[in-house]
Image (cartoon, rainbow, N blue to C red; front, side, top):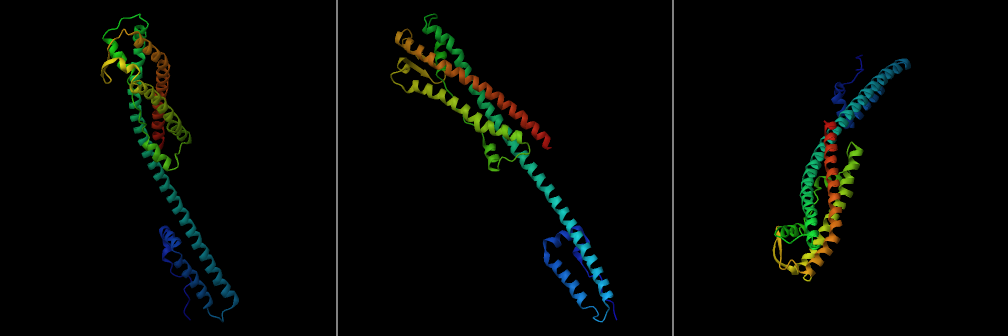
Amino acid sequence: MSKTLLYPSFPYARTIAGLVVLHQNKKPMIKFFRKIRQDFISENPTAGTNGRAGKFSKYLIYAIGEIILVVIGILIALQINNWNENQKSKKDERYILTEVIKNLDEDGGFVDDIILQRQKTKNAFIPLRQFVDSIGVYNDSLQFHLANLLTFERYFPINNAYEILKSKGLQLSDNTLTTKISRYYDYEQPKMSSSIFDIEVSILKIYNDPNGLMRFMSFIEKDERMVVENPEDPIFKDELSNFLIAFQDNNGGTLDKLLQFKDLNTTLREQITNGLIKLN
């Protein structure tokens, strides 16, 4: 009587890759165990109980070994998959953080321009105060001081990369860095934008009021100089004095906020740069 094959062919179990494929396609595995059962049942029915038990034990040991190999293969595949996912997450994080730095650079450039203008306005207060208080004499330089006083700038926050980060659920490996980026864009930037807009509103009121300071001007060269028709008009001096008093604190407060905001911008760029180094 020919011997029954004790170990049926099982091509997927020869390599770890084959085991993973086997796990993904469960039909071959089902066929395999079904064949074991059929082989066991089809054994010589006249064989003794001990013989059948021995064959069953061999089949059972073989089956357990195959299952262990499959489990090992699956665990290795999961580990490789986790490693790949981790590398992909790091790549995405590096890209987003690099874009955030670019946005911060551009945002910082806008802030520098606004700081420069607010400083020009601050420097214009002293000669203009001296003029309205009759301490100084009106001269051509006052034309430029008036222009610096009544020039405003618009701020367009740059936050494209942060919007991308938010769309991904603010998922960064460094939670502290996530918090700092979020605070900059969700709190500090809108607050700064509001202060800059207040300056614009104050100055536009002057330009849009036909009964205000503009009625005393004979010539206006935008952002360059403003010529007063009769500089010694006491009404003009009085209205200019009132505006200087009201506007000086507004300008000074906004300038202080801008300088603080600029420091935040610089610090955040440095922190993100350090975060990128850790990801490499």
